[in-house]
Image 1 (cartoon, rainbow, N blue to C red):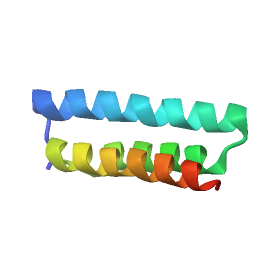
Image 2 (image 1 turned 90 degrees about the vertical axis):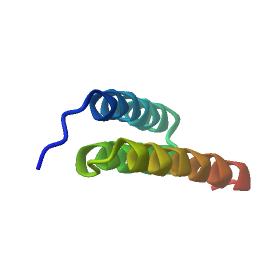
Image 3 (image 1 turned 180 degrees about the vertical axis):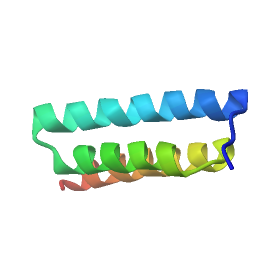
Length: 73
């Protein structure tokens, strides 16, 4: 059930930390898009058990936050 390979653990640490950074940044800047993106990225790192899928989803979330911020949301 649990995947404890080295690639999964490293991906989980990296993307969970990036999500926490987005969450803190969004809270300090009062940016709902960054806060929601951080929460979703943390959730992805908890619930996805594939390092590759976690990486792809996290990069997609980062792109979505960037795109929505550039659009003015």
